[in-house]
Length: 113
Length: 109
Image 1 (cartoon, rainbow over the protein chains, first blue to last red):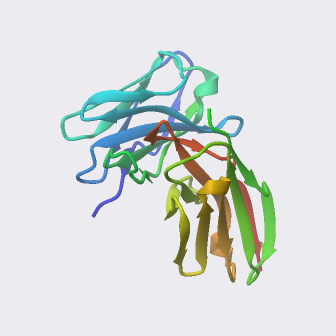
Image 2 (cartoon, rainbow over the protein chains, first blue to last red):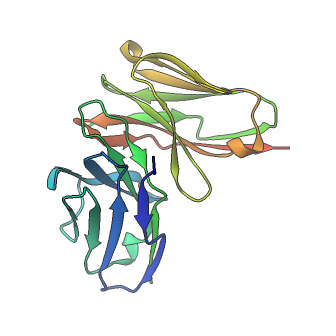
């Protein structure tokens, strides 16, 4: 079974631009969650999508948004990029059950100049 | 919200040594995961262990849910074990994980 895939793996953007990251979950998984990892804040939950609906949301500004498609692939969008958005963005895939194990992709490393 | 603390924050071992990493959490949980973050940033699943003890090769983990802690044991460490180890627990739902601050392990020859 293929693992979680994320594209692109690396991105360089400038302040004010917007960016879209993609995550394809493990086949059969319906839940995709997104996390931001920075040296200062550690790993923080952004949001979760399940069956094309946002089911949970973390404490991030509205510039961070996402969506999920009928094939469970998910995209995350960040608008009006700031220097502080430079981070490793990880997505996690699971079946979506109440005690489901999370499996992570390789991440997208975003640098904002 | 739930607090997750890991200790020690940093650990340097010689190859072949054993180590114990600890994860304390502030509230009851119904599952817990241990991850190893490799140098490229990917989180590798080590254990899904809501309670009890599990073993996988040189690694084992024990979670005592009633006392709100989990331990990760690494025996006969190898240089490939280097990296950061995280524990994570769900907050509200299984898909919303709260991570500890991690233990950075360096295994030297």
